Length: 337
Figure 1 (cartoon, rainbow, N blue to C red):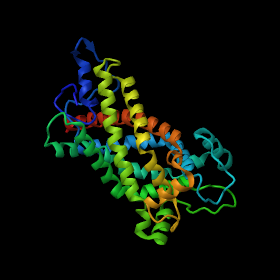
Figure 2 (figure 1 turned 120 degrees about the horizontal axis):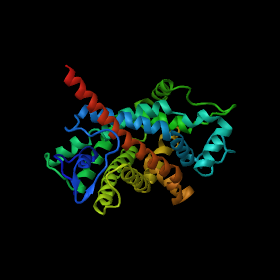
Figure 3 (figure 1 turned 30 degrees about the vertical axis):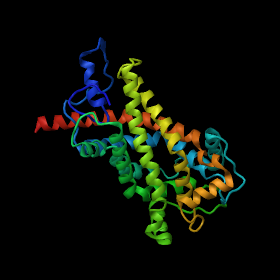
Figure 4 (figure 1 turned 90 degrees about the vertical axis):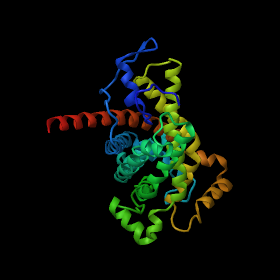
């Protein structure tokens, strides 16, 4: 992938490409937005901490969309409440606020933040290091190497963050109505309840579809962001600025949703299902296909797209700024010591 050279081949060339804002390149001046990029590559700890924090910020802002997506995805299954129907993302949000109150939109938020601290810090923070491992430290790796690195870090993150995702999904699917028994009353109680009744297997339920889904999401999201951004800059449609980052991130969210939505629906249904409802994730897919048809795999597509698009924008912008802020603080601490 062709990039403006500045001494590194980071997945997120913003840190280094934006140094171009201080010099004349091909007849154009690139304005810098936000904090000044660091002169040295951020260490692994900074990248992991920045990724986790940025993902938490993105989750806080977009969590209602994710909850609406989960409700739409599980619609059609047998539930305790059959008379509530969700229609569209905003109709789902309105129905939830009317029937369960506004707090229902943030069901599972604690587990969601726990998930991002574990998950995003690995899948995003480790990406550059894994990519360098595959290339031996060579600059400008090919698309296939980037895809392989994205799949690797996505699968690694799921392997130990899965319990947080199971609890998050189950809280989001839980209907908070008078007269309807609630499966869980708190995050820690949910972990204990699942472990007591379903064992470790229950906490890692749906790991295979989740690994598949997040490997797809990670490599598609990060590589597509890179490719869109490069194309915009190559054709001089925008400068390397906030609008470029916004369009790149939103475009990456759309492509990722199209590719990952079927696996995401299966993952959500399988993780939320009571013991015995489905024999496996493949069985869950077969039941969906035979009973509801192929369109079932794209239930909740609009909220998925809205969520991934907005999530990507918030995460990428926050990630770059937090990372730079941490590098500024690190430099000040080193100079004062």
